[in-house]
Amino acid sequence: MAPNVEEAIAEIRETFPGLRVEVEPEAQGGAYVVVHDLEFDRLYTPERTWIGFSIPFQYPDVDVYPHFADAALARVDGTALASAFQKTMWRGQPVTQISRRSNRWNAATDTAALKLRKVLAWMRDH
Amino acid sequence: MVGADPAAAADQLVGHLFRDDEGEHGAVLVAGIAATERGVRLLVREVVRARDGIDYVPGELGYRALTPRFVAEVSGCCADENLCYLAIHNHGGRGRVRFSGDDLASHERGYPALLDVTNGGPVGALVMADGAVAGDIWTPHGRHEIERYTMVGPTIRHLFPSSPQAVLAVDPRYDRHARMFGDLGQRRLRDLKVAVIGLSGGGSLVSQMLAHLGVGWIVGIDHDRVDLTNLPRIVGATRWDALGPLARSRSPRVRHLSQQLAKHKVHVAARVARSAQPGIRYKPIVGDIVDADTARHVVDADAIILATDTMQSRLVFNAIVHQYLIPGFQIGAKVRVDKSDRRVEEIFAVARPVLPYPGAGCLQCAGLIPAGRLREEALTPDERAAQRYVDDDEVHEPSVITLNSIGASLAVNDLLLMVTGLLPDDARMRALMYDAQERVVQTMNSSSDLACRYCGTTGRSHFARGDRGRLPCREAQ
Image 1 (cartoon, helix red, strand yellow):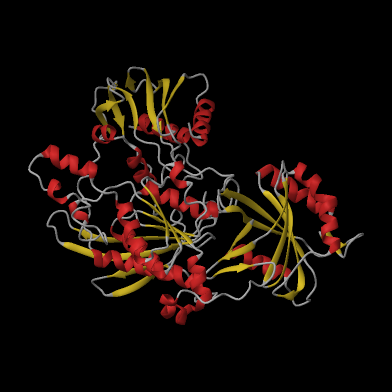
Image 2 (cartoon, helix red, strand yellow):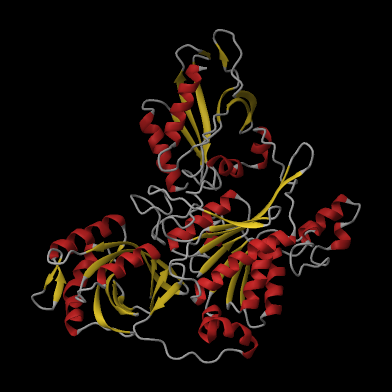
């Protein structure tokens, strides 16, 4: 695994203490990461879900997106998910894709952990 | 052992050492290192100027010396950053320089300990006069002289301990070249190693031009094979290279077989180069610059020309330029077509110098390596399909030889003038864009960000770290 990717994973573990972080290296030097047991203030069902994403080997020059969640992800109030959500496949299983591209991604300041926090914040607002 | 110094550091250094007082002044060069089969290069990242009377004072055993406190501070920083410590001072005279006996004695007293402090260095000293540099470099394995010192700017200037001997007249076939840049200029071209990344339309022309110019050593890198649609723009490619009869077969299996057996583009480029210059040293590499093993073939080049259109290769090229202080050029041509009515909207060709000093064309600072595009290129075909990206690898951009040749000519011509010293020292090496419909060549300003991971010199930037930084490459699996 590329050293920058290892650092990103360490930062994710620090940023989300107490949560299970599952990591699987991918062939090019990047990694697949899944953070479990995330909560969304009872806005979504299931109440606790996971968010997965890949960190490519050219991180941090490369944006970290899209993110993926449980295929059954739905809003508790029954309203439709925002257009940035779509049903697709990831790593051989059906998932909900969350597309939040950072057009101003800055390799000097943006990180995978920060991006995940932004995605979670966005989900809580939508 | 060779030193390389980007223009900004060279200006600072020369201005600090050679002043109106004509006295002796000192500084420390903080440097990275690159060890390759061509030798070891020390890469100047930063000039730390010693203040006269404070950091650089009359010595007890020699004329002047850096204070122990200054040496401790700077060498400590070098140890922390895993960089090399090179003290430098100036002598009088012109075209020839060497250390004094006092200088060498001070090295013998101080450098064994400094090697320990810096975890093996290398450490050492340089002495500079007008038009000459000598060096005494210490490593855990021995003591070495500096072969030459290279300043990379609009002119690539080499300094030696003493002026090189007169250049013998070159091959008479280069007579018309020599009338422009002399036998010395032709000799410099012969000694050059240039890497060409991408040997399709633009790159094949670059490779051919370099061979005709008399460049002695070319490394060509491309993973792709020739197909029939390449023939109108890859110089020297034939129907046989594309296995034309098979490629036209009605059978998909036969067509697929032809794609697997057609000649690699880089081998066509090697054939064309050897035809233009039979004695050329041409190393064709079937590979991708994004792979670490392939990128290693480029880090000791004297110049790199990028003629590919992927963001991943741009990122690696830009990193190598700044991390190894190698002048680079990116070329390209674009025909913008309206997707709805197929109307041609723009036609232009670009040649962009990417030089290893701030403000000199960093592709990252110019926003030419979008993080989102990099992300898309990192996906597997299955992921691309699942995540609904619409770009289809089988749908190619328009491309014609006339446009490709403009970008190629502009870049190779810039390199030629830099190497042979025909550009003024204050030349602004801005990108050139030829707008084919307006029939004008425009210059484009470059931008630089001090915090850039590649051209910036602050914090953890990769600038001039050489082998002591990591390239954004795929490691061998």
